[in-house]
Length: 269
Image (cartoon, rainbow, N blue to C red):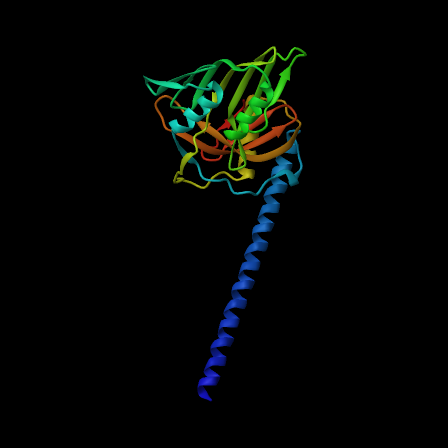
């Protein structure tokens, strides 16, 4: 009997502890929601005072992903070169991180940063579909084209990583009378490793505050913020590692702003 009572007492204590934890979590959640609502109201009021309209529903509460270190993938480059240049494909190391390729339809140059240029008669017919197929195969969004009635003009596509756009990692296509004559841009390697962050990434509200500071300093004319989303920014140079960093894309009625989640730096393309 004593053991039975002890068991019931232990169960009661566990129930009380769990109840206390649930109440504590509920109170913490309510406090967090209240603080978030207050921050939203203050931000909307701050922008409105400067004549900038912001719908609170636009403010995102997604958590930015980790920054990523990108390693060059020459096998990926070779596949991209083969898709554009055809066979037989030959390659040559030019030093300084530059590799050139020559194929049956033209030639291409790839750099360690991922930047490349290809030219020749890369497609003699169905050029738009060739461009679309290349984008699907190598991680780009559907390309957009500006062509005249004769099939001459340009096209462009932005790279996607983990479902998010890499706003400064793009492709450009050149078409002449229906023939694809040049492709240039940045090929994003899939060999990536997460980087340890020294500080918490910028929240959406912090990014909007950074945007407002830069807008004031530049005296940019903005009357409304229409959209906000997470995306990536590709950072590379001849002497530094290639880094994929998360950033907030802020769309206004007069242009776009990108706020780096790691540094707070605001970029206006």
